[in-house]
Length: 407
Image (tube, rainbow, N blue to C red; front, side, top):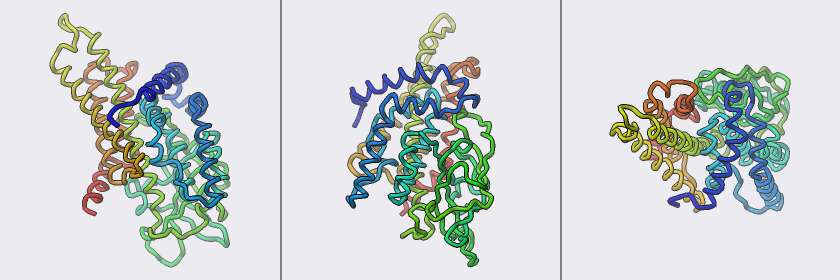
């Protein structure tokens, strides 16, 4: 794949029409946190038939599993095979990055973890509402003292209490946390045998948002991505029945520490960052080209000055590079060879940095106007910076890329 198909471009134009009508008039409300993004997301899914597509895909998958047929689970990197989802991510990122991030965590990370690890009964219990966004999902792994050391530094724990488990601890920077109905939570198993906390097994549970002992903090005020509610979760002796343990087993297979499900989530999330980055690059470049043609200094358009041309040219180089990375990942996924964690980390590292540089150069090109909140490039610069931290800081991506090379 080297370019978007005619069908892809038709989808893109339709999405742009929806954004113009249904999203842009509400950007100020979304960015101030007055309007949660979920109703807009649901309307978007319904408008483009994605809720029906997701439901049909899930039903086919569950029917095949019930019949004992081998079938690859949906979600995760399989979304690379569907260009509509990538185009939707890209187009929304340039207008309301937080809105599409909230959707991605709910439809992507939360649903795909249940989809890949859950029993048939668990999938039937939680997925039908998640894949249509009738319920909002959150994926809770980050903690105040762990950050990039998400698994090793994890302190949230569960201990057995008869057949049940008791969950204690807290999570932070949780996308959709203030509003989530269904929450996937990672916690260390405390068996009371003195095993160092770093070496304890990680188990994955599914919580409902109204469970006794679960409380939430208010949505954080952030530098960017304001349309995505992000907050803290606190677990004060939350009682969990065995049917909430994903897979209903403590057996984590070959990964003794149980981090495989988290790592697969990281892979999908980091590929998604490349699509979001491309959306920001596209919008920053479009706005910069328009401004370079309309803004005049010393009697001529600023686009005729070579330093302005250099900025535009470097934006185009970044756009081509990130787009081509996505095209390669899409083709590999269709061929049954989705990106590894190391490859996804490389995509995230480069694309997030490129988006931030392009957005900041757009601000510079706009001059004083670029620093004003009424101009979109100011928001794009704040949003883009979040991508260098979100889904694992760019610094930790270096480690994953290097480990992949040295393995």
